[in-house]
Length: 302
Image (cartoon, rainbow, N blue to C red; front, side, top):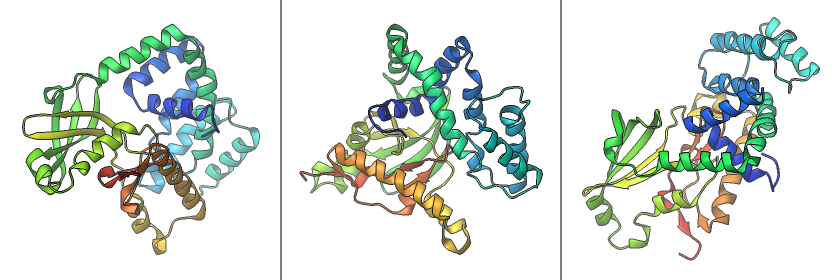
């Protein structure tokens, strides 16, 4: 991400790109200004990092390269330099093994182009952007348990369970964390300040590298958090799957930098994260980290 003052706007753009309503509004504006190709490239490379098979990864890379990056691509993008194009073409022609980060440098350039050609002009149209924000707020507020379809159990613990759900109004899947109120009260009987700490921390934070809380609601018996759904695993999973239990130096630098930015944001909000470990750092489909499990977060005063 770029330095301030634009960093916060880039974070908002990342949120919009991950939101079905944001995608539709950005896509409609991009069509008006003839800037659809960067958005299409972003979408088509979104899941590249999570492809498990080396053969399929190579096939998918060839498809994306021919569509967007080749000299005669039908949907050309302007952020691919001649040197980058030649290097990518050579690696694909030689049949080299491609890492999950094959498109990462281009995705960074793509994000910058989407910001400059689509998001910034849309943001400058104050009336139109205000309408988008109002639509976003209306879509995400006034939520009840009846707004969701319940798909399957993802996990369970001492306080409750995590369920895969589908929200009909946004047409998106989420992870719903359902906790028993009585169990929470009993557990935090001697520390009432920690009761609801996770919800408060998630509501305070707004950062692309911290697990996003979409909704918070409750029933007579349950406290419910609706969180963004991440199914690609944690840093611990990546370590376990890597040769010798280690990641490449470039990957380590990348992940550490993003975790540091997430911690910095928490500190700026007056919050202290007290359970940092690879299992609490997820790697999302977009290749960026998400800091999770904020139940143990405390404010500096406490």
